Length: 257
Image (cartoon, rainbow, N blue to C red; front, side, top):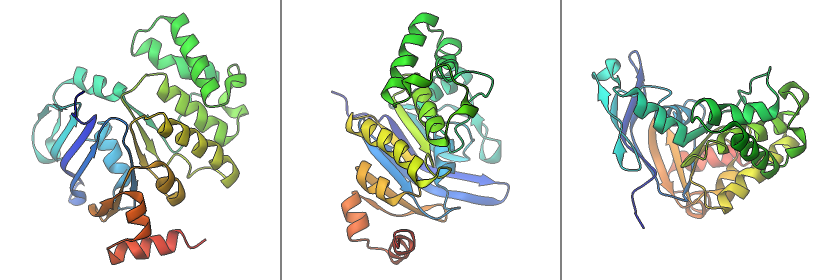
């Protein structure tokens, strides 16, 4: 058994022009880890996820997927990944689930879920369809295969987006605020799916405003403040006995209700 992390971020820096939003962050996710990133809006949580998935270019630091570092060319604001094939391979192995679902409106739910395995991975269409139906069953909307996204609730659309991510058979799932666009009752449908995935031992990085979910599903929580890690650790410690004044203030404001 190898102890190589699925995803490792070392000394990550990200800036937009002169504004530095990530100022040197280290995050490691081993196989089966569920790492939640929490913090105020603007603390850099979603940016870290987008840099990890190479949707955004970082200016400094290393991103390693299963021990393999991303190859870069250029420096600073001119730094970009050097190998397009490597980017595609890493991206397909770190499936991202977005806040706004990002489903194709002109395709049925089944077509949405099986599209990338067929076009990106070159999977056999019949095989991809069988897998897609299985994952839609898994997230509880197997009866919605032939429906278009506009006919589904937000919670159902987000579950379809999770099925789509799973259908790529990724090494890890990256969730960017998966419940923040949903009404509370629909949110619970999605939280249940994420909890089920965590109990299966799937590797996940989750950016969330939902402190209860972060506490329930994670084995490691990272609290970010202004682009730096202010505090991190096991959820019981972080939520039960926060050391930093900033984290205490953040938790009292987000968990007050």
